[in-house]
Amino acid sequence: MEEVLDACCGSRMFWFDKEDSRALFMDNRTVDNELLCDNRRLTVKPDVVADFTEMPFEDESFSLVVFDPPHLLHAGANSWLAKKYGKLDDNWSSMLHDGFEECMRVLKPHGTLIFKWNEEQIKLKDVLATTDYKPLFGNKRNKTHWVTFMK
Image 1: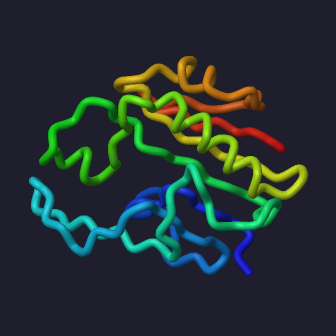
Image 2: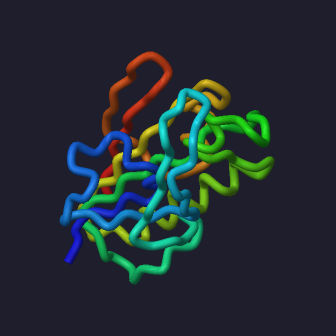
């Protein structure tokens, strides 16, 4: 059984092994080999198609959850960034709050949540304000943050 959940896997860009058997890959969409503006192909093939705000898993199912939700509010309908990363709606604060709640719900006691956020359009401090869970530590590279939580 998988011990790791990638709750918003997209095209699995940061995975060393995109077929790692220890992980269950979830996303709310599938994309079959769509051509992007730079002639690369985008493929999103999750193991489970579901939304991170309402996960179809029992409580305390995973030791590790990776949460890399969409971070764009403003992107055109045909934007390659929106196609690649997804897009938040105007209710982003509630959406991210619910995502944090679901990630923590499916984590086992003392499990770890790795949260990835790019603050191009929404600052990390505003995102962290959507949840009562407190981060342990993190790392920032340019505008992308990796933040670690423990249940």
